[in-house]
Image (cartoon, rainbow, N blue to C red; front, top):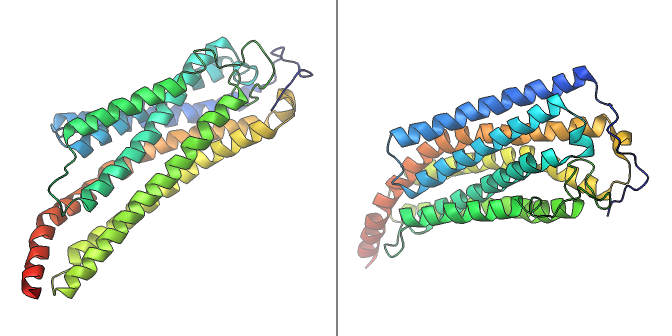
Length: 322
């Protein structure tokens, strides 16, 4: 782990004024755009009174998570513009915005996972009547997601930080500790990539099997084929967006854990990279409303049609075979 006993943390002015503005203004712009997009999603769903559907609750909560990420990112960017040194050497003032930022990102990840699982259940259980995801289930999932996200994200506020020690301190996200960043990042990144991959692949496999079953019965399979294509396209967009948004941050944490250089030695290249990773995370908050509101609307309509048609068609096919 890192220890920087030979490094000077005297808040020497090392940031160039023009570089701060070149990084800060685009960050503020992207955060404002993300706030506008996610507020539009939230107000639209509330105005349409669409929150009685379980998936709509998850979509709306995802917009809230992205909204909080954008607000906290806006806060951090303002601190960066007004006093960029504290984003390098760390300060008590950075704990609260970093904690809120971490909590909102974790909430976004957990909501993306929940949406993937809900979409899987919507397809896998469409032939069964025993289990139906109710509104109460979605509300419980939302509450659990926020409690877990805030608990993990606020651990530095509870004492797990390196404010008063230079041992194990992060050079990119000071005053966070490196071991805390590893504890938060690695398991959540792994979960965020593996579970959506499993759920969407399973959806595609289930739709393909049902398409083949209906084809064997002489039934039309156009709806299944269309839904399968839509799922494949949506899941590809989700994966690419998540990869582009979170992989650079993950690489930054790994670098942080293995780095033995001082803060000043890493300026400016590594800190420019750090600020760019923040912009990419905000781009994820900007892309989520587009993917999960526009494309998911079409996909949801197709899945709804499948639920209506599947049971009758399978039963008819079974009777004919008998």
